[in-house]
Image (tube, rainbow, N blue to C red; front, side, top):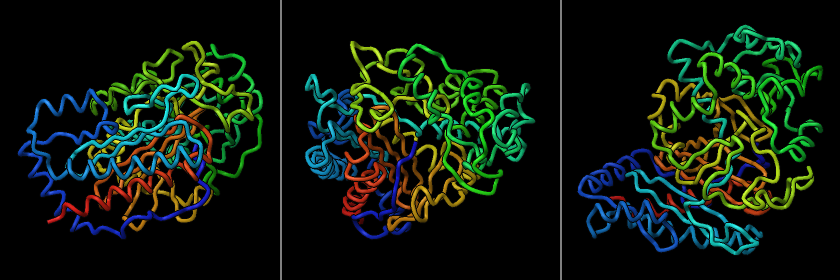
Amino acid sequence: MPHRTSPRACTGPSRWSGARALRAARWLTLVTALGCRAPQPPSAVGTAEAAARSSATSAVPTAGERAGERIAARWRQRLQRACDVHGAPGVSAAALLPDGTLVTCAVGVADQDLGSRLTADHRMLSGSIGKTYVGALALQLHQEGRLDLDAPARTLLADPAPLLAAPNGGAYTVRQLLRHESGLPRWVFQRAVLASVVTDRERTWSNADRLATIAGLDPLFAPGEGWAYSDTNYIVVGAILEELLGQSIEAAVVERILEPEGLRQTHPLDGARIPNLAQGHVVTSREWGVPPRLLQDERYTVNVQFEGCGGGWASTPSDLARWGRALWSGRHLGGAATELALEGVPAPRLGAGVRYGIGSMVEATPNGLLAYHDGFQFGFLSSVGHYRDLDLTVAVQLDTDDLAAPGGPVSMLMQDLAAQAAWELRQVEL
């Protein structure tokens, strides 16, 4: 769930023009063709990936690698400040530069109780960033002619009863659901839901279970006549997609997104233990009765499966950056579908000038168009964004859900890191 409260422009250089970015990208691509290895500051790069790249390439650093080393050094100071000043246990970040160089940096601890160091390979719950997978699946099926985005939702399910009992009776379209224009209230904030999540961690929630929690409630507004962020929208879309595909959303995401994009560090929250998961340090969620630590004796202290298509995944900043670039650059869906994803409606509650498209938040910044999404889950904060003009993608995750820990909304930390990266990239222009 996003938690942005106010807009703020990047604090680094002013807009880097598309033409200048293109010149730099072409030069970096030429250098890459001659042999590229990822930058390897000792505390900045995931060891497995860095070792693999290092062994396969020359010892002479490329321009992208030199920029990456400077970016990692800048980031280390910025992230350490977030830990020291704002009390974050640990922060991890990754960037994909125009030439494909991956830069990662992690500071702080993965578990305050154990004092274990956070690394770039630690996974964290990514919250509502999971909506980007659902949006991409919907657009894939739309391209295949299997999903009409403007069809009323109640006409797309064999059993529409759960929708008919919910506010607005399923009269909203798929497009309105994907853009949060349905008027459906948030099922996750119903008192009975939060109580169950805390007390029944073994329960398996179905989409019908989730929709039943809002049966009989009043709608927030008539379909298409307002905007309100609601996880319920993506629960309905998920039910439709599962019926069309004949498989679970988790299986579809793995088959249609994760495997084709090589995202091997991303895992569904199906209740099973996730390898190398950082401890989630709970602050904000304590008001709902969530214990201070997400993990105890390698088990979840609450139900993490409940989230469903509103989120439902754990990942690393590296995988999030790879996915963000694939999605918002147009490589994964193609140009027409990507433009459709970015065709947003005003979302004033996310900040002045922010629009919400299909699984995408969109904002004009001094560094050009930014497509991004934030995520909140018990014990974690995440954000990933892609700057189209710069061909730069940045992701950041914190192992705490303390909204004040980054010094403001987590997307602002992501934009700060992107501004520093953009500044360093300017130094490699010809």
